[in-house]
Length: 219
Image (cartoon, rainbow, N blue to C red; front, top):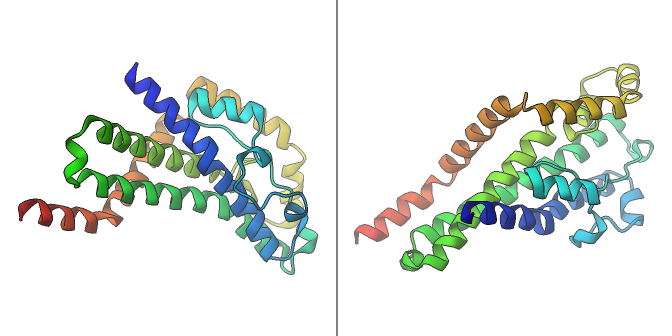
């Protein structure tokens, strides 16, 4: 029960704190690339109410993978449409990775502090680890090259324009198929492998905190 509650709190924190960062990053990069569509609709904000999709929010709380209200992007405003679509799509997963990195740093600082013996502080540390895991899961999932995920938008940079827009015509049907595959658990193993590899990589990147922390503990 405690693990379930911690998972729910972590997913709620991602929903309220990290998902808006993901969507705001899409909108901001699109704006910087020349498209003010999302800005004009008030999407360059960290207010979660501006980004939440009711169904997507329930999906995140229930299974850890969901979606927000799509950020409107009009590639016609980009000087280089293919590059603009690719960078604005990449901004969301990168924002999740940065949130995960911040969570990992905070967890390690907390874990090496004298206060970590307190049960309440350990609970906060566990919550931070869950937040890291969920952020990494969102980043990996969104980078899948399947419409309408961010990874499919990245494909605009590599696919011929005609082929890309032909694929987008079937976006709704592909999304239904993706949800079915997720429901059946067919992607669980590859996603778990990718998430674990990313987690270990982030642990390695923040390894300097372990070195400093152990040094202080041995003093």
